Length: 494
Image 1: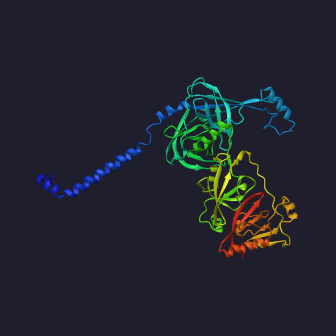
Image 2 (image 1 turned 135 degrees about the horizontal axis):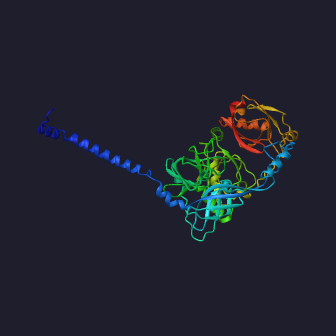
Image 3 (image 1 turned 60 degrees about the vertical axis):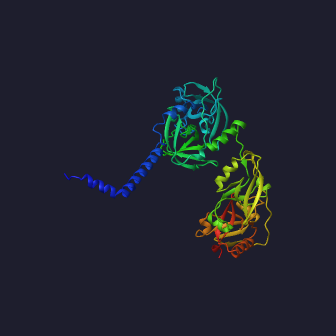
């Protein structure tokens, strides 16, 4: 074994003291970083037991009963009118089949208490059509519940029970603070098992499924049938979502569940509690997202905002809004797209006067709109002027075969006598117009944000757009009464 001279070692240490100091500093820095990482890792809970114990008393199982009309015959066994129908009906009655007698049907779901005086939140689809609603509490007792109100648009329902003592409840948190990757915990009554806990993370935010007001939190916490209406908690024990749906090929959890965000739910619950129904703001416009070619045609710097495709009678029309306006700000909030605008308007109180900033023909204008109530809105469309005469019967532009609307064409296409514009009677299948969805039967009512009643007017708008250096022109197209804007390249007009 090699021997080390202590004196030589001491000399070596003295000579290398600057290097030694460097390594000491590096080791210290490593320890500091390690401690920081360990502290961060402590955010991941070792156990959910304390949290589950604290909030479980506020989570409830919901059982509903519904009277279902009895079957009038042996449905599903023999075809209606079959000579064997009487035989099978007699067989069912003799063997205790339902026959014509009504029967009771039960369903299970989840919910949670939000106040000590007995208000309970769940999904609308859990209690929809129910004759009786029974609430089972964590402590083991049950109480009947009355329906306060529902909102099918967000699939939220509010119930009320009467209890002798104050009930344990949970509070809503701010769902906007939930980050992708945060821990969450779901509680409910999956498959009738009752008061079951599952944990996971926030997988995604701002998911939309099919509704106008959708704002779902996606989570991989296990959610199954029966979890509907149950709460999704953050690690502070606050409800940040109501478990509503799953994406699954087999009906069971595959780690893709959706909870309606609490910031949507709280507004609905407040209205149901106060009015027994929702009261959403109504602007009174039809809108669509701004595409890149539409932005270019309008000379906009970006695709942000919501394009107004139609303004029927209502608050927006009274405020002077026009088809072709691009809404860029609503009540002080910048508008990103149509989905965001719909949610902002819906969450604004009925009767409030708001400032709406629009881009109109390249200029910014501010309109003051007093919102109506969406639930009561009846949209009526104003009649337009008759088109001018002396037009060619047919013309081809931008891959479209166009014809001015005549009464004969209106009758043939099932249009009102007041309908005006240019009828699309044919579309070249190799054209950009066909690619962007235009079809025979569409009606072009505007070009370049101006009404077109004749082919010559359309040709004029095309020339004006070219002279202005535009690469495309914006057309307002109606199909079955529904309007939408389409931008077509001006090269296609040559």
